Image: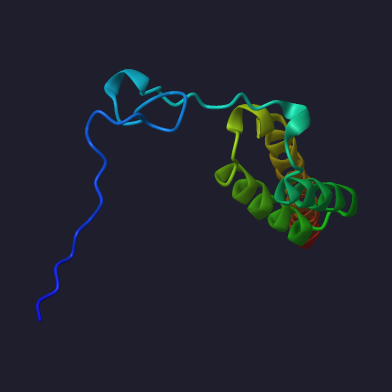
Length: 122
């Protein structure tokens, strides 16, 4: 016994069931248009929010560990943005809080070291 496989092929002049015709034809190709990102439609970025909270905690408590965590989170938030043109304001605010927290945390240590050195020399 021999088996023959036959495939049903549509003739080349057959109509496509879609109202747009043959989707493979070059005149129906449409270029991709990126959707416009609006600020109010975005999901909250939790890394930037955590960075803002840690930066504020580091700034108010003058604890450099909070500020280092905030710096790490803000850089992580900047690197993983889905729409940088919309979320950049929040990420730069978080970065500024983390940097100012580091500055206030370490300037206090620098000031204390200067007084210890002056007291030891006298």
